[in-house]
Length: 138
Image 1 (cartoon, rainbow, N blue to C red):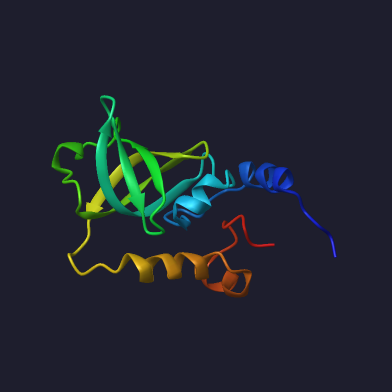
Image 2 (image 1 turned 30 degrees about the horizontal axis):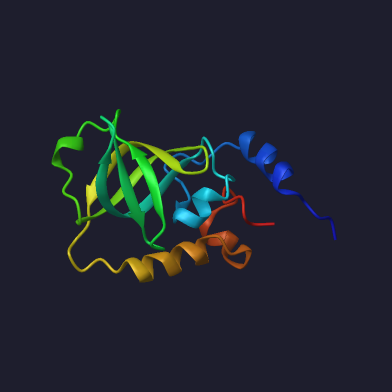
């Protein structure tokens, strides 16, 4: 069996074309792996403290924290800390996302269940359902 290294996967991902409208759903742990840098991704969680002028802390579905840049998110004035949101944007490095858009989720959104779904999306057993743009699939 051919073994691939993390660096090889990063090179393969940078050459990948994401399907239009398709993007991996991440939690903080997956983002911090560095495998998704520069990809369009989705994260679910809650905004926290403002960091600088245009960024906020974001507590993800796995309770890990990342930084979300809101510079290009036109609805940033509507964000309410403590409310659950989906953020769609470009992964920047290993601890950030540049948000393109966010949307408020309902009050009964189950972040634990969403986190389990994210794990399933990245399981190679379910590749046919989620596509091959998820870099953790070997």
